[in-house]
Length: 121
Ligand SMILES: [Zn+2]
Picture 1 (cartoon, protein in one colour):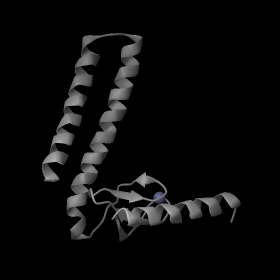
Picture 2 (cartoon, rainbow, N blue to C red):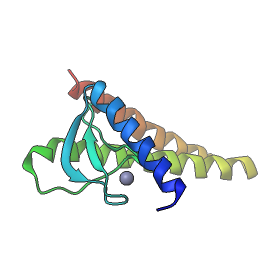
Picture 3 (cartoon, rainbow, N blue to C red):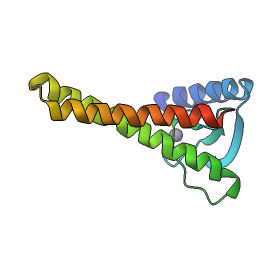
């Protein structure tokens, strides 16, 4: 094992302790990328102590609510990428169609926020 891996592991352990302190719970599922135990935050998000937000496919029925959150997170991520790409396009050439598309993706982001705010009550 290299020094780098050792440091990463220490870092992960530190992060796990932080997560637990913040009220997160450790799940039976592991990160598909690195195999670390995953944590469920109080917000319902599932994160890997090393990779941050991850999207797990789980057979556990308890996770169904979180899966919905996963879909929202993925959509949010996609929207950010799309908006970013559209903005790059916009910086080269300003056209109404691009602005229109940015506006639509922003609408989606707003809706995601609205769903989150609604479900946290
Ligand atoms: Zn990971």
